[in-house]
Image (cartoon, rainbow, N blue to C red; front, side):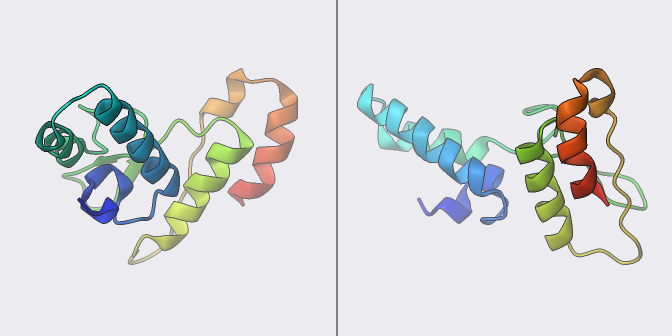
Length: 116
């Protein structure tokens, strides 16, 4: 199964989800799960509010695109910004980050410049 066929990787846009998927596949394989079971599980997992709330969950049914992610540290915010820049958008991009308010000030100083 090619990595781009795993929905959680978003056709390679989410490199860390590719790494997570490979790790999960390796763990499942070493435990003796049949490859078809692993393939079925990987193909059935999506970035959605139902299956992965707050982790690159796309909200459908609105006249604009909404992606929700828990990006609360510099690495997560950087990945979110990189993804948002790659999404096709008609109009402007607006990024709202609400998770930084309950964190120590130091990560905020590192994350804030990424969100400009």
